[in-house]
Amino acid sequence: MNIAEAIRVALQSLWANKLRSFLSTLAIVIGVAAVIAVVTFVAGIDGYVAGKIFNLGADVFIASKMSPVQLNVDKFLEAEKRKNFDMEDYQAVLEACRHCEYVGAALRNSNGHVKYAEQSISDTTVQGITPSMAPIYDTDLTAGRMLTESDMNNRSPVAVVGADIVEHLMPGVDPLGREIRLDGWTYQVIGVGKKKGKTLGQSLDNYVMIPITTYLKQYGAHKDSVRISGKAAAAGPALSEAVDEARVALRAHRHDRPGADDTFDIETNESLLSIWSNFSRTFFMATIGVACIALIVGGIVIMNIMLVAVTERTREIGIRKAMGARREDVLIQFLIESVMLALVGGALGVLVGVGIAELVTALIGMPSAIKIWAVAAGLLVAASVGVFFGVWPARKAAKLDPIVALRFEM
Image 1: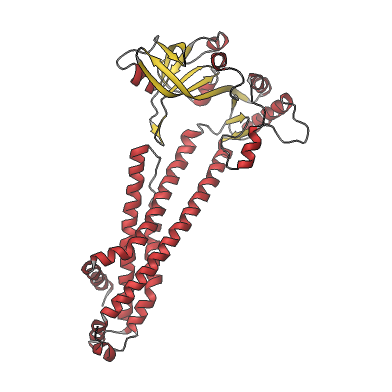
Image 2: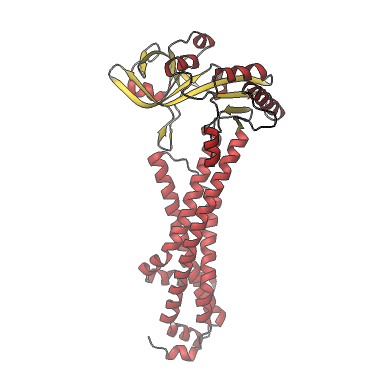
């Protein structure tokens, strides 16, 4: 019997016992689906984190009271006790960072309430920024202008709004020059940001940007910690020089003792992505561990099913051997059936995993990216499970004595 014929017979056998075949591959389906879904999400989120969450180039650093990514509870609680950054810290970095093309400061409030006429929108992100944050954020506008130094110096009640503000509050109306109410204060719209869409179920366009001095006037100077961003002339050595200058300036201004740890954190794109990569790798490995348990359970089920199949087809095996089938032919036949059973489960697992990823992406905007290597790895692992757990039943079938097999009765 050649391989093609063995595969055909194996598929006929699986089709003849559809329900049993499906139930025996269920654990394989779950294991492979879990791996595919997690790899798809991790790959998608990795790309999203790199491109949007940190919104940094290779020449940008962020200095803040505490790192925006904290994975250790003790370090988080320790960082919470630090003194907030203020505008004086920003001025210190601005004056000292000679390798910086831009130095900016920003404050953020995620619970803003915006009203225009009788319409309103909640959970708006309010950003108080210096004008120099625009080139650091690489902010694009579809209409109007960005905030200026004059707006900041005069504490002007002006705002650049996201696309959600316009779509929900001012449909069909030119927003430029209109007045909106932001947490009870009146602002004039001077610019509209380019639409960014959603991710993780949250809109990226529900925001209002105002001068940081105006923000401090409305919300107070001690409520939040200022986040300082710097853009170096270039990546590499220039960025390292800029980070060192900012660190020296901040340590001096915050009176950090010589030899003591910094009372702040400075992160770059590379360091933030490294933190995220470590976290995603840990999450991925934990999921792989769970998937391996499912695959082992699936393999044991397949082995039991194949042992039952050997018992059910004992007379068939005897007839084949009596007609000239060699021991190797019988072994290959049952081994191929085991592999095909696992591969069918693997293929279903791939489809289920991709389907789950696409469904979650469509429902809540979770970033996802299907990786061909993950699909190939899932099928390869499934086939390997079929081989490993199918060897014993196949050898048992191959060793049957044809005379004993022909006398066998269920």
